[in-house]
Image 1 (cartoon, rainbow, N blue to C red):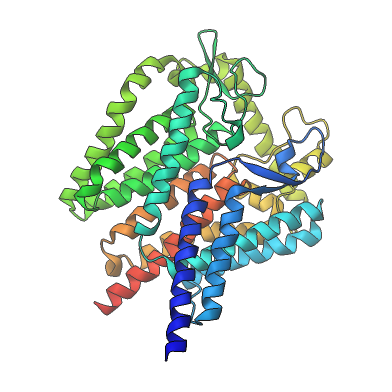
Image 2: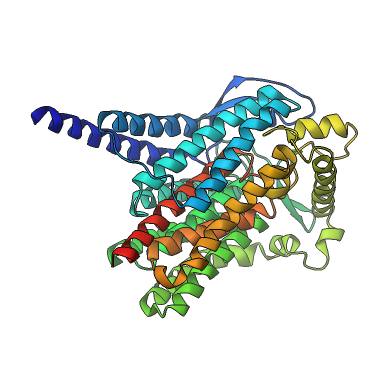
Length: 455
């Protein structure tokens, strides 16, 4: 008996360590801090598209899975794959990603991305089986938001980097070519990067985290309202200063979904809390919105800025050209795709005189189709759609489940970003957020379904 008790105690400690590693993984998700395992220059393709990289978040993701797997060895228990339709979609997506290695224009690169995909599938299984409430991730998400937003706001105030290169911060100056800026009135104005690779990535990570915090906050214990609203306000300001339109839309879409369900289910107190949180964000951001009205107008096509401002015009035409060529590349490789993560290489091979940067199309589903073929695109589409189908089919049983509503808001936010950018499919921070949300949603959906069935 004592022997069994010792094994059980060891298993519990391993589970605690796995959860701690998960928390650190979440905090580090947006960080660009990395080690270059193998440089693979393919000029003029941006190195991060072809190099083999090990991010700080990767290390703790692996530790999360290692601790969890050891806990299963010490104390075996039955696992669930998650909601059937959803899990089959993700399994099919993973399988087609692995198979694409054999048809890739760069098999080594696709193999590297396939290993990453397997780790993320493992994360999904861990989350579905171990995380039953958002309480487990709220603190790490809040820390992620506060750190990244605080650094981003500091960069905007100084209009340069904060000399945090040791933490992975890029050297930033709005006068430098290649640095992301917004232009108005003859002035080049730096967009907030935080400790990420690009303002759009920072904006997306902040938007996803803010929606999660908002969904959790509306039914949380009031003792958490002051600290969470403070973090939320700082995060909202940081998100505004990224000038990321897709991230703004993602935040709005996720928040409106949550508000709509709260109103429909007549959650009066939760609606009031939702409004208070939005108000806190507006109070903090309002002076900056007023001060940056000209730059905001440029990003929103005020006075036809998309045609009038050179940087905005180039951005619009670049996205159109990238999406158009991606359609052609997909048509040429419709069955097998060009290989997981290998799209920039395929673009350079097929269009060597492409007038813009060699990068993926700014639609995640289109990139998935080009890289994994039609079958992979179908599985990815089903992974995006099946959660909403399952909730629609079971809406009478589920009724109002706060945690599930919160993560569904984040799911909507990530999906919205995927209509305008590719990082939820390709880049490490976006992928990690995508699979984190999928795993949390799968586990919370199962938990809600079981509770309703046993009620």
